[in-house]
Image 1: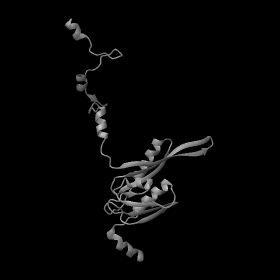
Image 2 (image 1 turned 60 degrees about the vertical axis):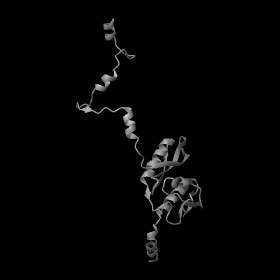
Image 3 (image 1 turned 90 degrees about the horizontal axis):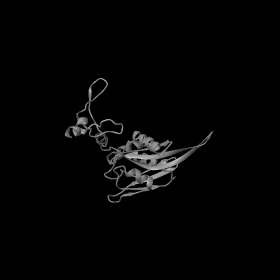
Image 4 (image 1 turned 180 degrees about the horizontal axis):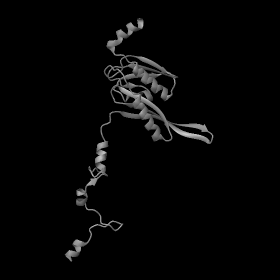
Length: 207
């Protein structure tokens, strides 16, 4: 009776073949076409390797549905506005279209990373007051004292949340278009000049 139990297969698959035990699977070697031994990696190892610290954070400011009239009727697509930043002095904005929301956001994120700028800061606020216009958008930004926080509208607040700016007063004086406001904010940050260079800039302007 004991001999019959030893000879009987422990686990059988649905196809009728013997299932490999854990010990056998651990000892089994995987080789490539040339015969070289390959390193065994399971799914958990892949997840651990991919889940590293992110250098930049991203936020989707808006997703709009856009339509285009073609010969066969209307073609519906999606437009996404995405901001990317490192919570310090690097930030970027991207706009892209796609057949679905996921594709549009992925394209916009890629564009935002390619168009990132590095701007100057004065502690946790901007260096000086600035007013920038992009098409119909007109954005005014002023430095604020510590503890003020970010006093701004939705688009400006979203972008500043991805930077190291903690105190800011902002007002949108023109169009409410999110894309134009976002580019106006980026242009305002690009124009920031450190305090120690103010005299040099004024001298150059007089010349």
